[in-house]
Picture 1: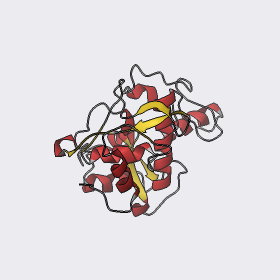
Picture 2: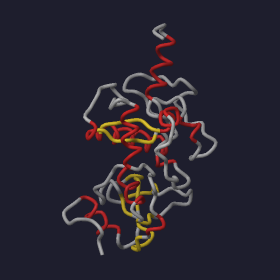
Picture 3: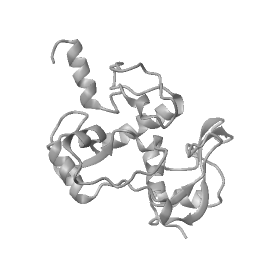
Length: 220
């Protein structure tokens, strides 16, 4: 049974994928963003993997006449025990927003709390294991080392940047500014799940990125 509401994008994609075959995200599926597939996994939906343990496969599509990203379902069974726990209870979510004073990380603007999403600095697309539940007792330093606040649109933008990085090995940049305070544009983690490979990238830590630029221009 399709777990999604009729006439939604996810409902359509489930109908396409329920044959358990690989399908092109460019011409067959409507969900093109990595964030969508992360949500599927969080809800216990089992996605197929390629030979490199990625939850997608790049292969030739006859309709597109090019190599494209393909997705598939591993099974139609939805397993509660496979659900990824984002581990952010309501009390902690409230604390995180207070710590950041409802400031959005990309443009340093204050937003109403309901318009902000809590995002992990280290993108879920690179997680090797599910995250254990976080506690409201986390210190301010622990919160700032792990989370940032983003609007929905900017959260999706970050997801696209991180997905592209996983596919190409080229890290994202703040539009038009090619600066990484540690390393360069090339992903240099020891593995695809090595968080150290993210350090230096704007999308990983916009605050640290700005601080390092300000040191260079003498504004810090």
